[in-house]
Amino acid sequence: MAESPNEKIPTVIVDDLHIVYRVHGAGAGKGSAVAALSRIVTRKGNPNVRKVHAVRGVTFTAYRGEAVGLIGSNGSGKSTLLRAVAGLLPAESGKVFTEGQPSLLGVNAALMNDLTGERNVILGGLAMGMSQEEIRDRYQQIVDFSGINEKGDFISLPMRTYSSGMAARLRFSIAAAKSHDVLMIDEALATGDRTFQKRSEERIRELRKEAGTVFLVSHNNKSIRDTCDRVLWLEKGELRMDGPTEEVLQAYEEFSGN
Image 1 (tube, rainbow, N blue to C red):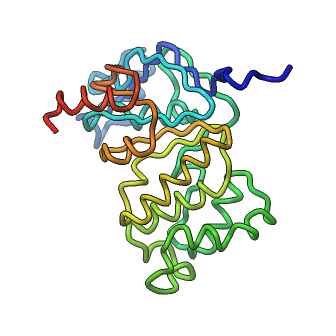
Image 2 (image 1 turned 180 degrees about the vertical axis):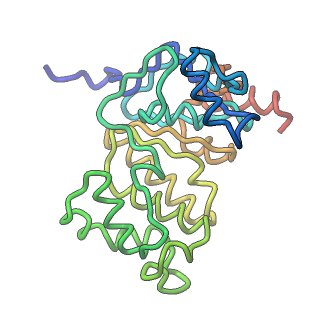
């Protein structure tokens, strides 16, 4: 049955999600393996393991064609939430449902420092499910979009010679060369000059038109305003507000004093 043009199609459903990290503190070192074995045998827990409740009961639904901003103070759980949606972190409790395979920028397009930018474009494209023919067709577009060759032939140099900004721009360019059901971007637009940021924002708008859903984590409220129509505000792992971009950003800016 054909879908109605006004029908909202869910792509990500997060239901009462809790993510807990277990951090190993003091007590490591000499003899710790013996102590660990003793605890296993006696069924005793490790007193030096601290639990960090990074995401606390978050619930939301994202839809096709939406660009959703994630904002909040450092350590509020934004990146943890994206990693959970991408299937990279197990839930302590709650559920995550996704349409297709979510792509987390910098993971699906993982780059290798000892290989050239050219080889990384090929490997990154293959990792995202592109065919070799698709990569060949889009190769020059990816390089031009990233802008890393504007001051020299950097694409033929090893990735370890790139600045962090150049590497982030190349990651975004590889990921943006393909349409995604769900694309999650963690601070990629904070890199590069305003020209690159504008190219990136325009590409995100195109991805939305191609029926994708885009999540953007950023500390740059202007990028959120220019790109997103909806914002999730996290604080201390809890979803504090979910609504239209301007409404949520105003509340956040009053809270943070920006």
